[in-house]
Length: 261
Image 1 (cartoon, one colour):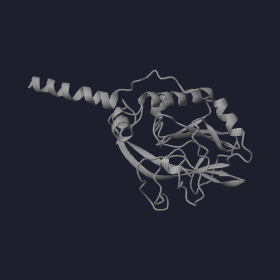
Image 2 (spheres, one colour; image 1 turned 180 degrees about the vertical axis):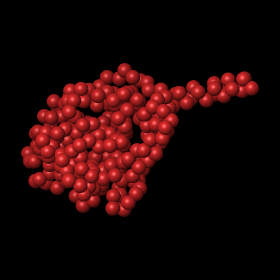
Image 3 (cartoon, one colour; image 1 turned 135 degrees about the vertical axis):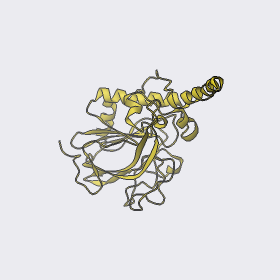
C-alpha cells in the first residue's frame, strides 16, 4: 500500500508542479518602455484627451487559481471579461474588446454576434465591442494598424503597446485622461493581479495547451508592468480578468468619475 502511495506521488506530483505551480523563468528583464515614453506619446496627437472610460461585463469564467496564476491555490476564482468605451469630447469613442480567444457569450446587449475578442481596436459600430482588432490577422483594415511593434498613439491620451512574442491576441493600452488619471489595460498579458504584482505567471498548462506563449517573453512583459507601476505609483493597472475595476471607470449606464481630478 505504501508502495502504491509512493508511485502515485511520483507519477502525479512532478507533472502537477510543472504545469500548475512552477513560476519560472523568474529573472526576465523588463522591456525598454518607460512611463515617460508613454506620456510623451499620449501627448503628441491633436485633440481632446479621454473624458470618461466606461465598461461592460460580457462574461464570467470560473477556473482554478493555479491555472491563471501558478502557485496561487486550487480555489476556484471568478474571471470577468470586460469591454471598454473610451469617450472623448471631440471624437467618437474608442472601443476596446474583451481580448478573448473564444467567442464571447452572455447577454445579446453586451456580446455582439461577430465579436471574438482578438485585441484592442477602434470601431465605428454603435456597440461596445470592436468589430476589428489591431494586432490580429483579422485587422488588416483596422485604423492605425502598422507592422511597427513600438508603442504608438491611437489618439490623444491613448497609446497602444504591441506585445511581442505572445501571439495575436496580446496587446496593452495606456490611457491618460483629461484629468491626468492614468490606466494600463493589460488584456491577457496580466489576467489577474497576482500575475504582475506577486510574480505568479500564468500556469504552464495554460501557456502550453490553451493559450500558447513564450514564458520568457510573458515574464518579461509582467516585469514591464511592475516597472511602469514603480515609475508611476498612481498608475491604475486593469487586468484582463480583474476582480474589480478602479475608481474612475464607470459601468455602462452609470456616472463616470474619470474626469474628476
